[in-house]
Length: 352
Image 1 (cartoon, one colour):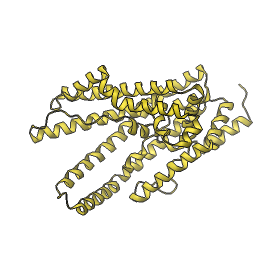
Image 2 (image 1 turned 120 degrees about the vertical axis):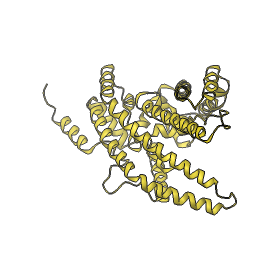
Image 3 (image 1 turned 135 degrees about the vertical axis):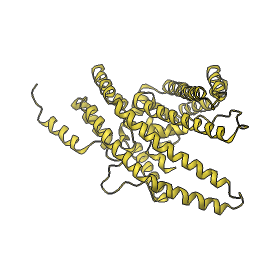
C-alpha cells in the first residue's frame, strides 16, 4: 500500500520480518457492540506496536540489523557486503527460525502469546494488558533476531551494514543517530549524540504520535471499505474491484493534506536532527560520511536506483502521494545550507 511507503527503511524491513497476527481469541459469539470494542482494542494494540517500533528505530542500534535477511535476497547485496553463500544460508535460516520455531517453541514467548490470546478485550484492563503483551512479544522477537544476525556477521560486514544505512540515508523518512556508529565516533562523541537524542526525544515522540494517528484512521477506513466489499457477491469480481479502486482513490485524496503536513514536520525535524548530529563529527568523519553519501559503492547505487524506481511505479499507479514542486523528498540527505556552512568552516577554522 503506497501510504505506508513513508515509513523508514528500518520500518519497511521490519514489516517483512516481524509481524504479530491478529489475536485468535475465541470471542466471536459476543454482541455486535462488543465485537466492535474488540476490533477497536486490536487496532489500539497495533497502533501502540507501530509507535513502539518507530521509536525503537530511532533509539536502538540493533535496528540497523533487523533488515539484513531481506537485503540479502539480492545477489549484488550479498556480494557487496561480502556475505558467503553459507553465511546467507545461515542468516536466512535464522530469520525463518524466528518466524516459526522460536515463536512456536520458545517457552517464554509461548507464555506471553497464550496470555495475549486470552486477554478479555471487552474490558479496559484486558485491553491495556493486550497492548503491553504485544509490545513485549515484539521486543523479544526483535532482540533475538538482532542477536542472531550480529553473531553471523564478521566485524567488517557489520561495518558495511552500518555504512549502507549512511549511504541510503536519503531514502528513509526517519534518520537515526545510530547511523553515526559507522564513522567510528569516540565515546565522548557518543555521549554528545546521546544528549542530542534526549533533547529531541519529545519532538520525535510528537511526530510519531501524529504519524501513527493519521495512518490509524486511514486503516480504519480501509477496514470499512473491506467490510463493504464483502457485502458484494463474491462472483462479481469487477464490482468488488471497482468499489476498492474508487474508494481507496477518494480516501487517498482526502488524506493527502495530512500526509503533506507529516512530510513538512518530518523535514524540519530531520534537518534539525541532522545539523546537530553532524556538528559532532570531526572534519575527517564528515568527509568520510560525504563520500559514503555522494559516492556509494556500485551495489548500493543499484539498491537506491531500484528502490526509487519501485517508489515511482507505486506513485504512478496510484496517481497520488507525490510531493508538490519544490517539496522536500528522498535524495536530500544533507541540508544544502549546512553542507555549505560546514565546508566554509573547514576552510576557515575559527580559533578557540
